[in-house]
Length: 419
Image 1 (cartoon, one colour):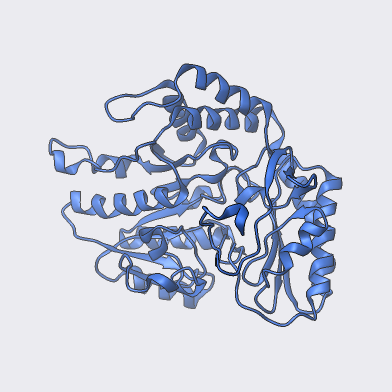
Image 2 (cartoon, rainbow, N blue to C red):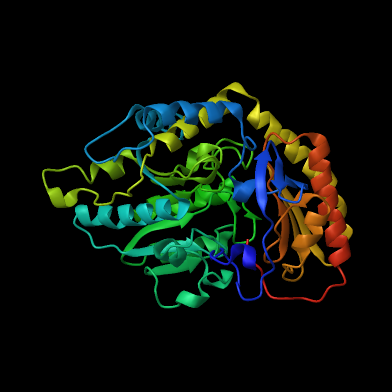
């Protein structure tokens, strides 16, 4: 691996992994490789590139901001791109989610939410440090976010014992699981429950309905527990609506990242409801929220995010998502009859083929050979394409999935791979 001998790659056993594919550019839905090949991106660069690569409106906004103010610290100073973005997010989000705390990544947005929840109760005179999370959930790779990620995911293995106190529940989809969640939330010291609305992403692209979220919200209200919604993956249209949290399950704290800037620059936001924010406002300095990422509210990233929101307003993104959903339902359905396939499911711009065994990382080259970029993990092969993909390119992706899944039917089970 001489071409990357100074790098340490994510989710990779560096001693045995094949060399990664060198990229020299990207445009629209295509990734351009150094050897001249182009790959249709089937997963939007980890679900970020909702408008595709190099959208001119976002590029122009970032270029203009670069000429004006590339960065300034966000303590004691403020700037218009962040003010504008915070106001726009508060207007778009459901309920009274109106206080926006910026950071640089999804994992940190979750860390901020966990810290907010614990300090919210401390500021109110209660000591609550435990969290209820859900089986098959994933919330990030930093220690706090990892703590509320299902241990069965495999992400925990190297850090057993270094966790925020938590208990895990099944999503409440029937009377038995609702009763179990109710019992957990009744336990002493529970600060908040955290959930990925509608889709559990890196835990296996598992879907649940709005009624499940309403049941969680109702149970949290019954026991006076905060609800945190991790919309890092689901936010900004991926599930078919701009945000996945329904009106009857508005969280107290909501986390955003990934597609927030249209995939252009790192940015995240933890958005709190007014009653959460109010617990931090007093004459006591120690009641303030003592957290401040160095690059929080970076003006370039905020400019990109504002431009991304412009595109959701001006262009037919949600209609495009609906069209992607319809097409993937039709074109992935033949996989259901293939050997080893246990489920095919589609929601918004997410299409999943679930197998009866862990998926080999060796499947990934088979996709590149077909001119597409798809990364199976766990027991799933999935698509999450940019919203601007046309029907022909989407058919290329779905055809590749059907072909590779069909060819893999005879392969032996192997170790779980990473997303």
